[in-house]
Length: 423
Image (cartoon, rainbow, N blue to C red; front, side, top):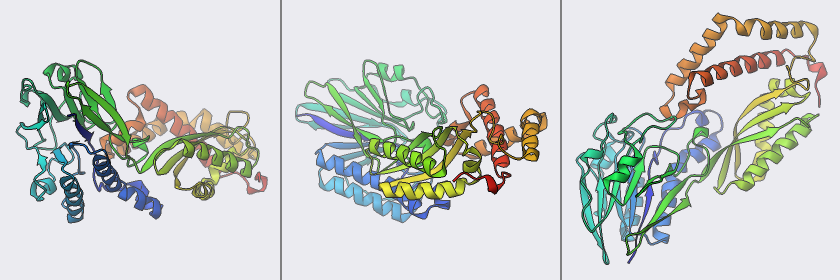
């Protein structure tokens, strides 16, 4: 009889909202509830597929949460699994190592929360003998590999290991319990159920080693469809894996070329078309898009200056598409000559623009001030949100160039006389 289980991690249940909560209350409510809805979808999947177990490989919570609302919600979902005869195996990761919820909450007997000393739970499923090995973080930081703390595989048994690890490192993620995928393959377990990195990856080798990614994104830095992994262990001990979608809301970056736009209405229609294409490609219930406008158009100065008006109109058009949201618009457009949005501005402003491009933005003090500000902002962000500044110094300097250029263009666009607007 095959043994089937769902593998997930990094739900960050009820994690606090950041920028979304400050502007659009409806969108904030949607995203604020999305992690709960993702867990409900995971439990629904387990029950519908009649699996034998659910594995959660760390960061079920976000920080040292003590909310009883979160606790009651989790207990309710675990009870649903218990009533369906489904075992649940949980380890704590770096974000929920200190959470009192799993330490104090009374959960059904079918739920195993592994402690900070590795142990294994033995199961028998027909002719299959299985051993589930797990180890939780004792503290939020785990600078050393945890692999040597795991037991060696039990003989004549399907061995499944659960570990929260950054592996050899991943962009936007701090190092926790680092180890190489090749070391996991060499340990001898049949399947490694990993957690921590929010992007799905299957690491090729002799064994099956999977980082499932997170089941629900929380902001644009966690864009794309999110899934869990459904695993079937056959009677001959071979394994098959499937991805199953779970995200309620899907963040996506949407690029729209406005080179052919000669009027405000034309630009709005091109933007709506681009959003519609992205909506059609989205399998999740809701699309949350970040627009990036590119191309050369005589509307460049006007779109920059009136971006708040553009955002409001774009949100209205997106709403008409159904379950579609725009959380931000990035403007990377130029005037038709490809140089500056000030090419059509009255002479004094044009002169200021030339001075800014040729002199001010290149001054050492200005560049250092912008660099220091960006570094300060980056350091205040959680590790998973720091990728915007690039992976090396060259990428960081390119970002500074972009900010200086676009900042200058935005300021000059606001000086544009209203008398020359293009409708």
